[in-house]
Length: 104
Image (tube, rainbow, N blue to C red):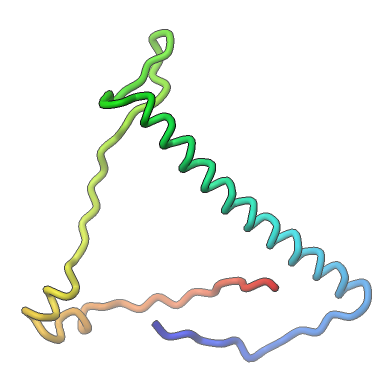
């Protein structure tokens, strides 16, 4: 993975700086809350699956309230491909460049 570093900057002063700091603090708080909510979602999912047991659908008063759906994901065994077909993986690899906000 290649990391590109931005070389431009902006400098906020006084009230604008305080507003920007507040934005960053709110962003970091939202990020932390999202992480907590993801953990809570996983905990609740485990409880629901536990209550459902081996059933794939749960009904409450005749209405479907939860179901377990099978999904399929296809992956490539990169080590195998590289061992059997050297260079093919590298030739077929696509690079996507995107930005990520790192707030401090």
